[in-house]
Image (cartoon, rainbow, N blue to C red; front, side, top):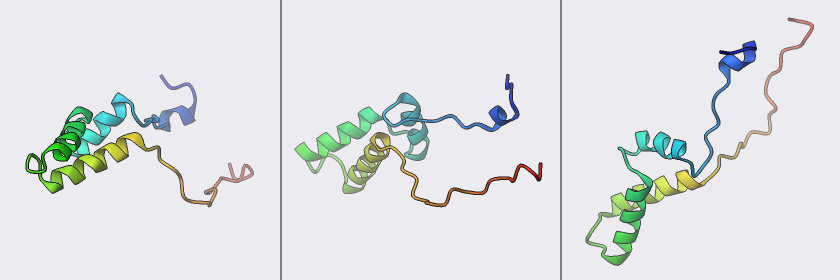
Length: 86
């Protein structure tokens, strides 16, 4: 149960390389798993006729998203409420 009002709206942090990240990405990549992505990448390197180029690109994108941490790009600190308004 949330003890503070701000705890109610806190989003969980999903770190790269974790099972949670794999599950999150799996929803966007048609159920692909890390094992399947690695199999596609390795299989395409050994025998190009085994997997299509589109499957290879999708597997590479999945692995890149799985292993890369997000980096904020905005320099804007964002809006903050003035304490006198509250």
